Length: 139
Image (cartoon, rainbow, N blue to C red):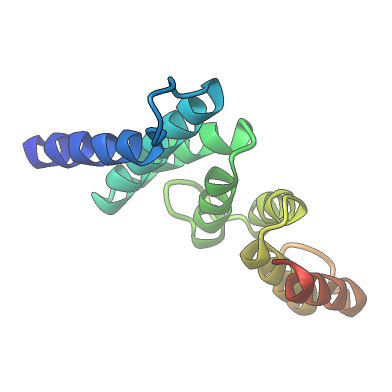
């Protein structure tokens, strides 16, 4: 636990330092929000790596429900793998869809594959093609 706390403090410091503006002006509210999200994501990642999947899932879910892309992707992955939560392709697909609608390429390719294979959704080759094409045109 001591190693976890030390690692978390170090990661928190790095997150805050990365967002300190290069001028003497105070950080904006947006920068502070981004820093908080980074810290929350790092905390979730740390407990995930320690094998505490249920706790990691709760933390990622909180981020996802607040519209944070990284939370959505990790919740989707955890549903897909059944880590920390009962495995559900349908629920994974829901979170991938939300992330894809925010423009995430990885989520788009996951959706395309799900539609192509009928995994968590009715098989639909046209929808699969739509998400494949969209993933290729997204920067």
